[in-house]
Length: 463
Ligand code: NAD
Image 1 (tube, rainbow, N blue to C red):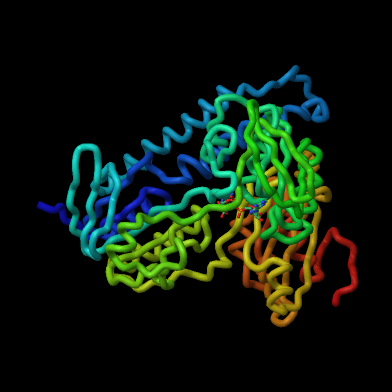
Image 2: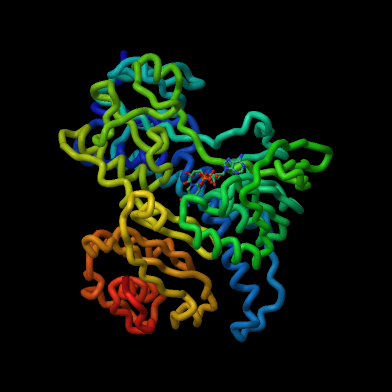
């Protein structure tokens, strides 16, 4: 006898578990299947463990400039094993938390591999045998995995992905990171702080190439101070594994030696082939095609998160889950403009942006005026000795509206929510009282500069 549900969710990442909870809150009977640890990539192999390690090394970085702050604290050394256990404890706590949320919301949890065999049927395969499920709606939230380069495939020991990089047993002496994107830059901050000699090799002309050029320049400059070497516009042609590490050969003829080679060149969607074929899902390569209601081409079947390839961000998945859950339970909602989904990179300094950047505006022929403010002119940033960075507020000349904000600097990832709330507005920021002194006043200053009303930046010619 099949178990029956209104909604059955495949995958327990941020997209899957939040969609399940929302459906349950609306009174639907919900089941969810997970083949691995609860919480998906974000919780087990992504956002949370990486931020836990970054939290430890941020503390270490701050401690190292204690003398400059007038403090005598003796030597501060990283203990990698303890950093790892702290990270594992945080992850473990959240694993239990997500499992508990399933229970408290009355969601039946299945452990095993879920395969959709028809628009209203799922087979759960586990060590204890198979369970047949019947569901009025199915939500596929099966996530993504690191992209592998076939000519130097992952071996899990010397050539590693972010999965292994978060769990290395000891600190390597040296590491070459292939890919200067989000994962490459964040992991460079972790390993350089604990003593690894880190070299990033990026194929495009700057680090974090999806951001504007000035962002890459600040990050490269600040990384240099941390001892991280950045090689841009460089392609890796081969990685040869030897007795104690590998030789990384670049197109330029240069060879780099490293104990570990982290390949961080993107992630790709993962959905079971059997599910795709059984349902006849319309695909775009490995990505499941969905409309703005998160519906696939098969009535009653929804997909969201990394498997639909829109943002590859946990908060993108959370937003899509809201839409899918509303529609599954009788609503009529559409996913909002993806440019309202902020981007956040937890490097030293942090990078966060929302809306269109200067590059995108230029590509779309949008004439802009860009307001700028520096962290080094901000009182709180000086007090904290975290003065690297800048805020840019991009205003469209045609309608005087702010179309994008980019922040490089400490707490950028915290400030971006306020920037997101103000996006699309004109002078709205004048209604907001910023506490003084706060780091977020840099945002206010840059915003005012975009409108020619800055208090602390001398007047300059406005176009
Ligand atoms: P990414 O797309 O951010 O960066 C990959 C980088 O690799 C790009 O800069 C690309 O130009 C470069 N590259 C590709 N092929 C190369 C090659 N052969 N040699 C050298 N460089 C090469 O991908 P990622 O860093 O692997 O992250 C994967 C996904 O996970 C991203 O979509 C990212 O948004 C997400 N993620 C987000 C966060 C966050 O929001 N803080 C953190 C980690 C991961």
